[in-house]
Image (cartoon, rainbow, N blue to C red; front, top):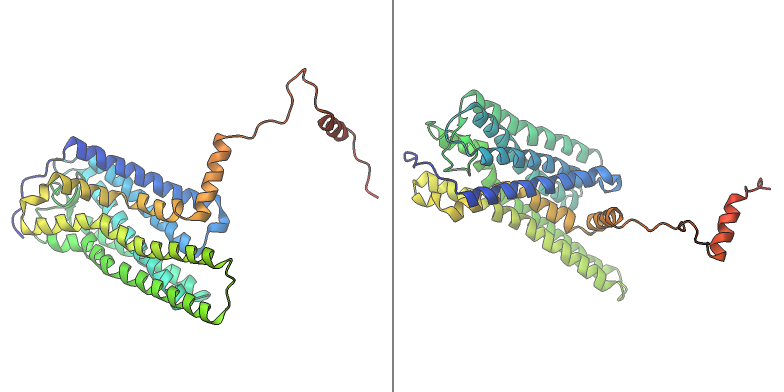
Length: 332
């Protein structure tokens, strides 16, 4: 790897855009956590996995926010702390994102049910928290996390560019899992989508469907198909800019300091929680209708049925009010 280029200067508008992305991602992750806490009937196994992904994205957005706000100019203790937190949270987010896709594949295509899925959830916890934690602890212990001159980040700290084996640690602390996710996510969601389409074709052949209900089924199927395409596509569109700057850094290209590329990298790394909120909350009818109902109840309280003092009640209302004052007799 060529010698590191001069530090990438973070422009004020770039910092403002990335900070806004961090805030929106944190709000989106917090909203997903809130929906899980508010409505127990929505706590399916898949949404439980989404909860843990949201927690990882929330920690990632918070650590990135601090890093961009500080815009480190050299090594320091808080640079190492912020780099360790963002490395753990970011890597964990990759694992949980793939875990959700793998769970959907196993439960839908392979029809995994019962105790096997509970064991699978424990395995997801062990891998998605344990592996990033082990990698982060090793990187901090070996003093690999530190100031990176914003050539492979956007103001925050990651892998020290002065380390001789920095390429290996960049791969271990994120880039390897990121590139694996580029392959695994489209593959798994494509297999799930093909299985669902085959199941609908078989259903249409062997079960007569009422013509009145057919358009509704078709519309819900098309929404599910779009989601299965958009989920990996959005992930790749957000993360690819980080990979591009990583490759440019390896090549020693001055294009790594392009302001547009820096801004896209910052948004892509920090907005994952916001994208998940859009896909799994705002674009999910069951969650969206409840959020709208909750918002409407908060903002538009029901008008009081009590009459103002001095205004006589209507006859029917007066009779009902008088009947409430008369205690009911014992039931016979």
